[in-house]
Amino acid sequence: MEYLSKQRYDELLAELKHLINEVYPKVQEDLAETSAQGDRSDNAGYREARRLQGKTISRIRFLQNILEHARVLNPDVLPKDQVTLLSRVEFTNLSTNTRMTFQIVSPHEMELEAGKISLKSPIGAALMGKKVGEIAEAQVPSGTLRFRIESITLD
Image (cartoon, rainbow, N blue to C red; front, side, top):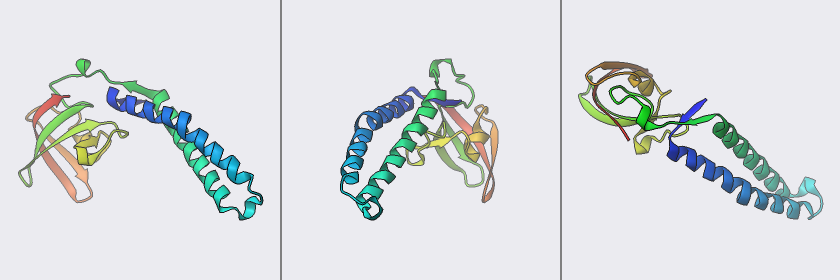
């Protein structure tokens, strides 16, 4: 089961509808056109259309699987005093005294540039369940990082 924010669920659903209603029919049309051009063994357009068909079908199935098993989180029922999925956490790296802020999200919502880290990442997993003032330790390739939780908010 995957937990998603309402926003991300809606984005994935919109992508799925776009693929099914717009992209896939165009791919099928292109495949039919290139198939009608004769010998398929020496038809680069046909091979490209088949590749695109497979890629599109794969993405459709992937999105269908995510959405079928997804549960949309209601932020109103999540605890506000500890780090959970959808929490925005400000913490201090105790070895460098650097403050950072990240939102903890599902792997399908992770976007490091936007300050969103996966709950399955080493840092995300270490922060889960912690409260303000507590110390979290994360095992990362460069060693062990220690963080002090400064604040927790829910968006």
